[in-house]
Amino acid sequence: MAADTKKKTAAAQDFVPVKEVRGGVMVLKDGTLVGVLLASSLNFALKSGDEQQATLSQFQSFLNSLDFSVQFFAQSRKLDIRPYIALLEERYKAQTEDLMKIQVREYVEFIKLFTERANIMSKRFFIVVPYTPPMFDVKKAIESRIFGRTNLSARTKETGFEENRTQLEQRMDSVAQGLTRCGIRTAPLGTEEVIELLYKEFNPGELEKPIALEPSAQER
Image 1: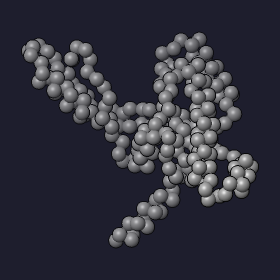
Image 2 (image 1 turned 180 degrees about the horizontal axis):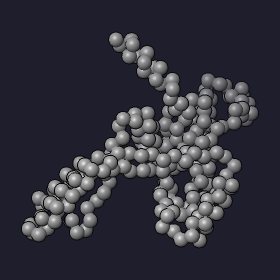
Image 3 (image 1 turned 120 degrees about the horizontal axis):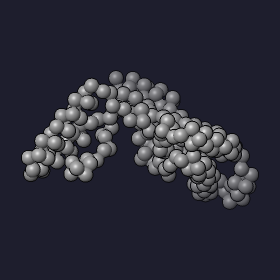
Image 4 (image 1 turned 180 degrees about the vertical axis):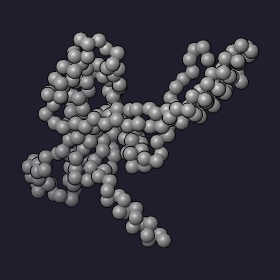
């Protein structure tokens, strides 16, 4: 049984293109480095006609300015409302005024009823930015021959990763600046956030996440 499980695990890993995640960067098995930006949403429908046209023109200019490929990715998640309900229950117990207790209780019941009838989903938007290092580096090859492959190998590998990550970060900065001009804010994902994103993608059955809402000032 253990052997069969090990075989299945190994076979599943063969389909995952990611070799490791370090410094907020995915390192693929082919050597490509991939960075991920989390992007804010933009309520395009509420803009006027002129604003919509200006946004489209700016986005078109942004795309035309890129000399590398990017991927736009939207992720939908089912939210677990229970932590929010538990927080409201605590606020309900802490209330000393009868009127506030009634209002909080009614609000809790409304949230429970609403979430039972509706499938509450949350969307997050990402921009995936890749960088493929050159296949052959003459300078490193000469240094390896002069100073010895064994002693230089680990240091050269680490230096190469940092140099390639710098190139990737420059691409990510370029993407972030271009989207800022379109009215979209971005933030690079860290190592733990990238790992979480990968885990959710390769485990589609686990899409629930605690809701990140805070009670309003009135509820407090």
